[in-house]
Image (cartoon, rainbow, N blue to C red):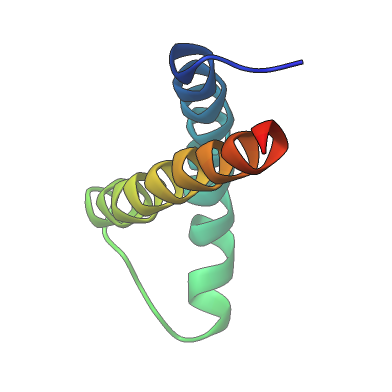
Length: 71
């Protein structure tokens, strides 16, 4: 079964969007444990940076595995 590029992107975006919400919530709790503080605006921004990286990584890996499966 193959997945189109569009569906790969939709899958990755959905996965990362849910991951973003979890990351922001986790950062709110975990950063203070390490003596780090992020402002109410900084925490979502930091989550956004990591979310963008995660989205690119997830999409690229999915396409690599799809290409390997076709060979």
